[in-house]
Length: 283
Image (cartoon, rainbow, N blue to C red; front, side, top):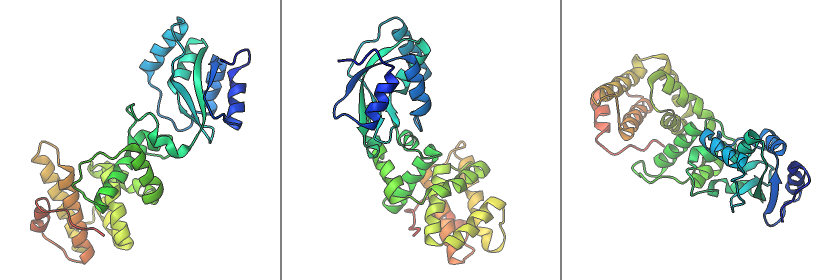
């Protein structure tokens, strides 16, 4: 039975405080929808304008029926699913009835709507992580470097969220380094983040020296291999129509790091061989 006659926000707030075990059918008015979007829609994906427009037209023309689709709220009170429908309600200024589910465990973000195109970046963003796209890529690369760089299997969103929370909770501060490398040299920020993170685990002091020399353009003496590395990466890209395979890039940077860490100057031939041999251990 639908709950009517009372602003929906009052009913929803009551259920947020004491989540029922089953869904509730609630008629949501535009004022309540606006309040939910402003107060409960934290860290969700950006709304989809085309869907909002389509939904709003259906609501305005009384063509919106009660389907099995639900609005979902976490046990922390956040709106987890339904922002496009709420935005359409506000836009159309027309109420709509919907099933509403309360008390979902935030740990299950990664398992929600797995039939929809919600990718690891989306799930990380919903979970409150900044720079979620870069972080998703960095987590993937950190996992590959620790396990098998040649694994082409797509990591599922909930698995990536678990990596962020439980396996690599300390990788986030390295995103700045990855983004700095991306701005300076156009290398992918996610991969660069993971590489610097893994290098730092191996030798934090030398990693900082390597990174700062790379960004600042210090290329002489012990930093000569960085110049050779960057020149080879540029050459590889120029000779392949502006592209360089991600594994080739990783192999060259890792080889340069290992040479630098060992205290040797290294040679171009050593770096060139890296792209045709298995990626080295960087631990």
